[in-house]
Amino acid sequence: MMRSFHFLWTFSLLKRDMKMLLIEAYFELGFARILKLLPISKTSNSLGAHMEETPYITRESDEILLKKISEAIHIMSRHTFWESQCMVKALAGMRMLNKRRIACTIYFGTGRDQDGNMCAHAWLRSGSLYISGAEEMNRFTIVGKFAKTVH
Image 1 (tube, one colour):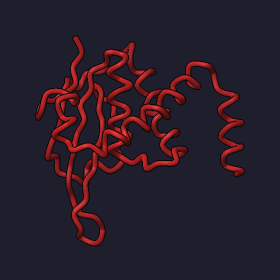
Image 2 (cartoon, helix red, strand yellow):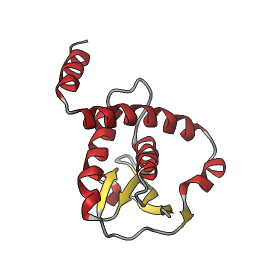
Image 3 (tube, helix red, strand yellow):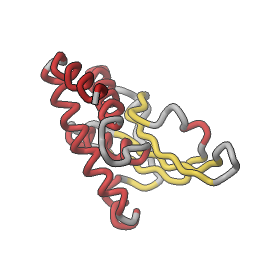
Image 4 (cartoon, rainbow, N blue to C red):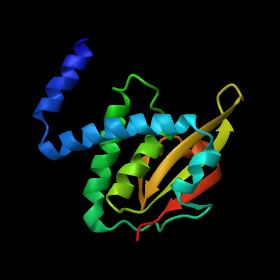
């Protein structure tokens, strides 16, 4: 309860643009959670060009927005009542960037956890900036990637 109050208090102090990004992130995380329930064969067409990547160049005009979107996704993922881990965050970020016509690449990887069990991870990159999942991506071998370009 106290955590919710603290979040609402902090939220009320934010500038309007960040409030709007947080609200959008919340709804995109929800939509992404639904997408995660579907077989990848049903959603892969919307992810972009299979096994391709977007350039590692960030437009200077996008850098601040990319960082704000990343922050909004990370903050709101802690305040959803559904699971909002790596794949959900990456899908939500991809949708938010697509709305703004910003190219990005989503990566899917596999690896082993501390006990030696297979595990998976997803992360999202736009230009040279990682929007989500960068903290653990080096532990995983890329098994799939999709480049979402804009026209």
